[in-house]
Length: 127
Image (cartoon, rainbow, N blue to C red; front, side):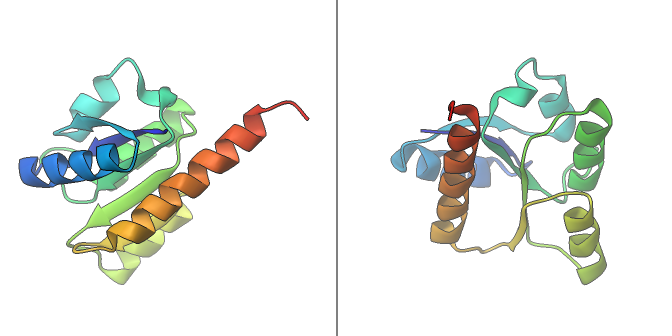
């Protein structure tokens, strides 16, 4: 089971993805804005963050940059209905693990979250 932060300003997307994550055995902690997410006390405790590119207020790239500046090493998976090639490239150059365009393959996102969780558990367990 993984804790996944979900940052999207669309309430329907948040509810849908949270339900999907729950049905896959994960816990979703949802935020409606980048500012709300960054103000959270638990930012570094999740497996990864599903981060929308276009948010009201800070955009996803701003949130990603703020995490980098804080030294918070949390894997970022971008989700967006937008995503010009240069924006996708910038997100990936800044360390994003993946960039999925909406509508996206739910199975691919769940597989990626499972893979991240497995790598984190392996890295945390003593050899």
